[in-house]
Length: 83
Image 1 (cartoon, one colour):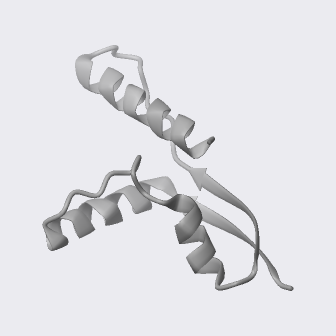
Image 2 (cartoon, helix red, strand yellow):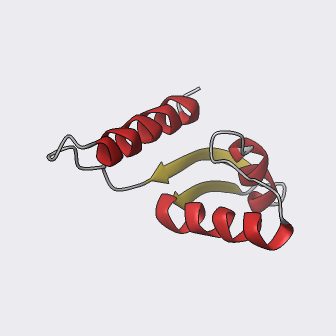
């Protein structure tokens, strides 16, 4: 059986979900997305060895409200992906 490892570029993935939300007039959230199901679909029946979701770290240097909210949201996503 073939083996596969899926790499997901977080920034591109986020913007694609955002675009789909607009086009379909439906809210898609990163936290609600079925990453395992998506990875299984991508591998097309091959053995899924693993999935790596990568994204740049959010800067918290300014400690302003926007950066703190972005950081908190990123931490929620990382926790969700770790499950």
